[in-house]
Length: 491
Ligand code: PLP
Image 1 (cartoon, protein in one colour):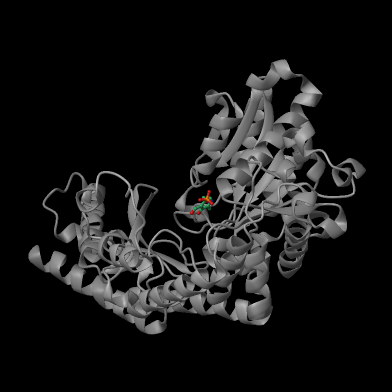
Image 2 (tube, helix red, strand yellow; image 1 turned 90 degrees about the horizontal axis):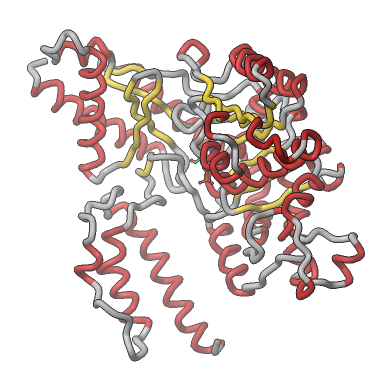
């Protein structure tokens, strides 16, 4: 790695990326390419001889950029944002620059120690109970994704339980979530070896805004206990993917405690907001949980990937995930005075993710971070207000954070239907067409969810560059497409 050449090419790359951000609004937010487009553009085999960075960047611009869906576009309102910032980007650059592999303390002490420190810092900003922090005998680790976090915590719970009831009883273990829990839970069950018949998906309803009801949980658990099964793990969500519903942690944890169940709190999207005092109450009751995670790469301006996981009793995790091969032995590990993060996760090798989170926390400070989060919530309130003023639309569930779930209301949609029998299908079809039109325009990108049989459009705000003017433009776009659909049908 020649420093002179690195400097030259690096500057070009920074210029390329800065130009990308400067022009980002010129691109269609949702990529408009057809499947297989790239194979038609690129040669069949890798080049035999080196190509200069200049021509590589030309290829990127010509062939790759058109196939990108622009997640950092200010008009990206799909899924949940994966927002980034100058500090998050530069932190990623630094960690890639050092390219250390901090699997054990000795393999790069700063990587391990910085991770422990930033996890305590962020835990304190969230006012997590001390029992989740290193300073209170718990601890935090940065995983790549919530999927990994749930797998690892479920393995810890499984092994802890099997030590009590015997390995032969693995088929009796039961895992609980709701019909709104992210599919990460199902995947974890599949990997962890939970009997597929013992994965309970508890139904939620609109009356509880699609949050998991503690009474329903209790009923499910007691019937499993009666059937001779062993309740193991509950995944509660703060900010569900479909509607940002908040499961009531306090009461759920009380039920779980009674039955000795491990509770993991998945706050992948909404967790970051809880560093604002006005949103902290959404994780009230977390003290009753065993583990808690949020994705700083979703809503904390930290480039992908950065899933922050806190656990009250790290020894449960390390008992399940530790290995101690001779080639990794060292005196620091033998002293048991250090954290070896390889024993807190699936993979051995690991990126220095703490660097970017540290830069984000230092560069912006808690005050600015809170204000950025609030600005997204404020923009969501603005969008919610706009939806409410148009009688053809309805907000489907009350907005909680920075996402608005809305649809063309049944009264407006039904008028255009001559199919009186299948009214719900007709309403859904109108909304599906509306979303298709919005996304095909390239001017904004939103996604949908189906809750309680309703097809809803999700406008999820969280991109760093989004401003109020983009919200106003998005709403205008929605209205124009609604005009076209509803007018075409003689309304
Ligand atoms: N949990 C929730 C509530 C989510 O919204 C998501 C993704 O949007 C996930 C889990 C999955 O996160 P990851 O991709 O980090 O596994």
